[in-house]
Length: 271
Ligand code: HXC
Image (cartoon, rainbow, N blue to C red; front, side):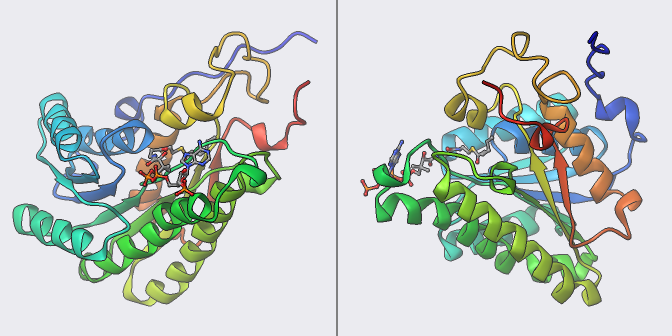
């Protein structure tokens, strides 16, 4: 069968209206690198200011400076561990003091590694749940009053690994399944306050820590035929989904999961 050429890689700045997020502030955990940094960057290119958070002070401050330089918008980089409610509270207070409010929150901090259950200590399992699940809960608790005030929205960055059983991913699958469930409850509890909550579940995205850590298949060209749409994911596939959901296009969308994976979750495993 001859394949259609792979679909284009979307550029949010060419798809969404300039100034779409002017006057808005996005707060993102795990915002210093990878998919989350790209989501923040797209929103800043469309006018938002940003507060990004991760564990390493040096790394997050460097990333914030880079985002400001590239977009011309304000970006504050703050160090906090999502496992620490007091550190998150302080980051929210500092961010709001500097930028005035928070309209959007991306819960994107995550930890992962490959390990069979037999090689997974109780602490290893718990560590990933603490970062992904408890970290999401902590971030929501630290930001929900801000979002109630602005009628804002959450995006929780999940994954597709728990939509079917994936070897060596017991910890992350359990953690992300819980994040999916948490998002639905946030949607129904905070909906009456005008706050939305959705899941974005990326598939295999090239050039990310997750892909480098978890996949042997780093060569997008060799594996191009594997996903239904004929190419691996790019970070902008995810940032476009974030821009859609945070814009008024997503105003009536809450409590749902958006899988962005080129259809990969529906394809049988390759031999
Ligand atoms: C087995 C491991 C392990 C491994 C760590 N542990 N790595 N066990 N195999 N490869 C165990 C340790 O031995 C320890 O248990 C426990 O986990 C905690 O380890 P620490 O190093 O003390 O934890 P910490 O410093 O908090 O680091 C957390 C981390 C780390 C998750 C282990 O990798 C991390 O912080 N990563 C952040 C960045 C990241 O990984 N991002 C990727 C997200 S990818 P014991 O019993 O010895 O005390 C993603 C996408 C998924 O989420 C979808 C992809 C398709």
